[in-house]
Length: 331
Image 1: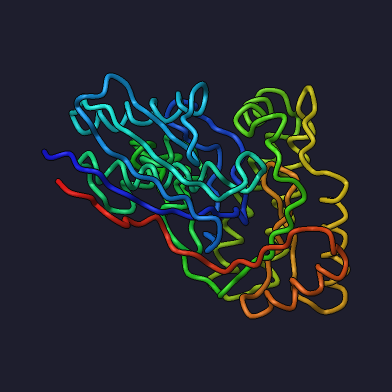
Image 2: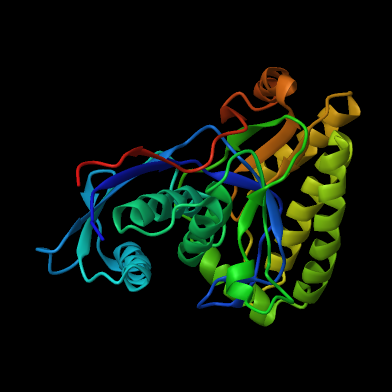
């Protein structure tokens, strides 16, 4: 099977019903399903070029050759791709990532979704969305959702004869939604999501309650989306975020991702809601806050937040596309 360069682009997603906790670290199988909105901002563009002459993989991110943990994660992922493809060829990976890396804005989601899409094409693997989402999941759980656009559910695979095959992402129908992202900090987190997640599962007394409530929240969210009930969607979104952060703060030692400004944003969004604007706050594992609203209300929401937080960078986002190839290169 021929090997050829391939370039893919993917976008981050923000989970409405959060993913937090793996039941299988190697296969990256989650304790619960999750549901997200893929955004149209912060694309990651990645080119994978298999080269039999290379003695090791080479990974460049934003023009800087990577070593250490980030390079090791890419190599581990490519090792999986090579096993599936029956190839021994190492690869050059060149990635341009516009997401503020490590700040809770799903940089790993867009990064590994783009890598999975490009690597599948470059090494001749199946390129259907289900297969690519399962592949992306092995790099970063949330990356499975960025393989698809708009509203996406990632199934936990529980109860299946082959949980690995059953834990994939797919689109779900729902109303047109958008977000305004308030960038509280673009600095790399002191505690990575992977580390904090592992500690939550192992040490937080609130984790079992998180798993139980999230399973029900996911069922309720799918029903709310199908009914076009934006208020119910928003309430579930905000509740899921706060429950996740409560579970994380129960870690031993505790981890607190939300900064004082993050909490102030949650309060401001509640005030806007009381004034009649449909808006609900959420935050992944980091200080930045994303505010969910109807797609047509994004400009108004941004203006209202700018009045209250004039010093924050505010980014308007709508639903975005799934990971897709830009250029297959030459065989």
